[in-house]
Length: 451
Image (cartoon, rainbow, N blue to C red; front, side, top):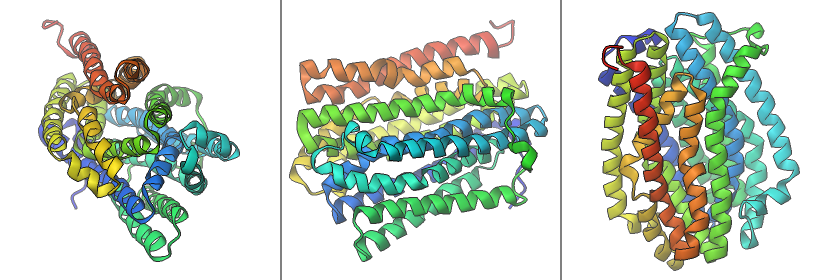
């Protein structure tokens, strides 16, 4: 394998570079998403549809804590990309050391809190009725491994910041495959039920951590840290926090959305509606993997070239990423509009769920072709270290538009109003993103004579 350097981010043609960065990221996200998808199929067919709803209840809590690691990872990786772009490896190593310390301390505290209030959190997130007991079993076991997952998510973003997307891809692939094998062993062979599904998930976190640990201890990483780098540096912590808060806010909004959706849908349609949302939610994670891959590939390229003051390359990166993203999203849109019934049958044969899920899926993905603009716009501001617009664009879709709509529309359209909120919020958020991004390019990325 040819030696890959972070300096390539500022030299190779943008189209070629974006593909080289995005394809491994897309494959990694695809494998991880397939893992979640197949895991849900296994659970639905081997344990039952209630088990799918139970896992959906647990996800907001576990994902939020894990997102603390992602937030610290993305915030720190923006600093690392720009530090490498401006030839400052000392700051890059210090930032990475601070990321490790922050992730370890904060996630352990949140896990202790989450376990202490287990009986209050599960019902609050929709784990009511028959859903409560299986959700509690899954929640307790998965939470033990969440700090490890947080370190994995943090480390993965740093690997990408170094310009090593293939290793980031491997870090997602190995545990995903391991999780499926453990699913078969613990659920199908040993018949451990929900506990088996939970231990399979936790085991996959450990596999991911071992691979990432190997990467940073090997010669593949440019970041060679020592114990002095682990000591917290206040300016770096503040910068990680301001940029990472964008990612954390995004995941917090996702968790709040799950909480509200599970409760609203439970009141409108009971366990069936919650299960339908769980299936649609899995498709939201899975179907858009190439668009998320483009976004992940875009981040280190934009950050590095902005740090190197190569603004023409930054503009080209934005336009190329949006073009590729829209094309891929349009293909996904057609597939989901044509085959929602077939997709639903993969998860369950329950007649009520089969009736409710396909029309909901069509509504949820109705504005998919424009979603790349939202993702790239928010990612750009995060990559260049501008936390405020990044935060506003991250919160726009779900925080400013979607959450108000799921309270307003059901008053007029019932459960249909909940599903209608998805495309409406996508369109409104895209309009806001276009405004901010166009203004930023005009003010800061164009030569003075063109402004």
